Amino acid sequence: MTAGNPFHAKPIMIVAGEQSGDLHGSNLVKAMRRIDPSLRFYGIGGRKMQEAGVELMADAADMAVVGLTEVAGKLGMILGVMRRMKQALKDRKPPLLILIDYPDFNLILGKTAKKNGVRIFYYISPQIWAWRKGRIEKIRKIVDKMAVILPFEEPFYRQAGMDVTFVGHPLLDAVKKKYPRSEAFRKFDLREGITTIGLLPGSRQGEVARLLPVMLKAAGILMQRRPSVQFILPLADALDRDFVEKMIRQESVPVRVIPNEIYDVVGVCDIAVVASGTATLETALLGTAMVIIYKVSPLSYRIGAKIIRVTHIGLANLIAGKTIVPELIQHDANPDRIAEEVMDILGNETRMHWIKEELNRIREKLGGAGASERAARLACDLL
Image 1 (cartoon, rainbow, N blue to C red):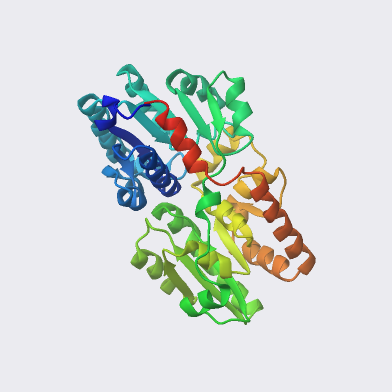
Image 2: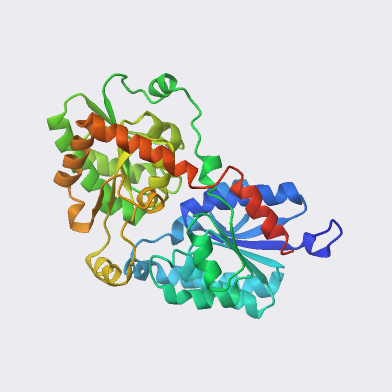
């Protein structure tokens, strides 16, 4: 890539359909612009990508779904966005399409891009090592360069004949607390010296609607068993605060809701109940013990149980290659079991110490800092 390349004036299309993708996409965009300030970006993302200068054609928060059956309710909207994106490929003729996770949408868009001569950089690969491995041939045909963020993904894709590089995990740069612990307690109006439990029900409205009531009922049980306890919930960017607080009022459990401060919130917690997803790795990198829960519609669960081929669902356990923190899936993700697991960890000093030690080892497996910069260089090399 040279400074005089006429491609520089052309906008780059980028697609991130989830909140975690929005974070990583924003950091990638900023890193690419540090390499070449003339680059311009448009596509799908959230608030963070918009703040990084991406022209949004659709909001990732509107497109995020969990479970195979949950797609149906948003299918019309998603197909409409797909049509606009395909037209934008033809109209703007970007030299590069950057895809971030979100495979069911991105692989279809990528096929159209490939037909139009657009090079494709896939950052944060689809988790096909967990399910639907047959997609790897489709990915190989359309992707020019794959940048993966988990160490075991590189040999998986390389064996399929793909040009792939492990860049490290971008959360190593992002997960940082801003405040000392005592200052965070004051800022969040929490009492020091009593047990603090975090509730992280996810970043998608449908996911929160399923999981937060279960978490709140578990919180009620924990209040009965452990009177000196307080609850705090870091509000995801894509969630409406009124939507969350309405559910909290219905369960009559005191929970402090804090927007835009997830890392400091999790950092003050003694333990957290966390929806399966990126938040489990963020919690692990902060060294906070957790109980992971996962719950989808009954049909989605039955379908998923037949095709998912991994022994763990939580990223912390997946990366460690063993069970560090408990995972409660579907019927096991009920208030009594959640409360039981939380109480067991809090009441067992040896287990708590072991969990924290194992969580600290996860960082060592994720590569060094600078994943966004390494990915940005790979992407710019395609221009």
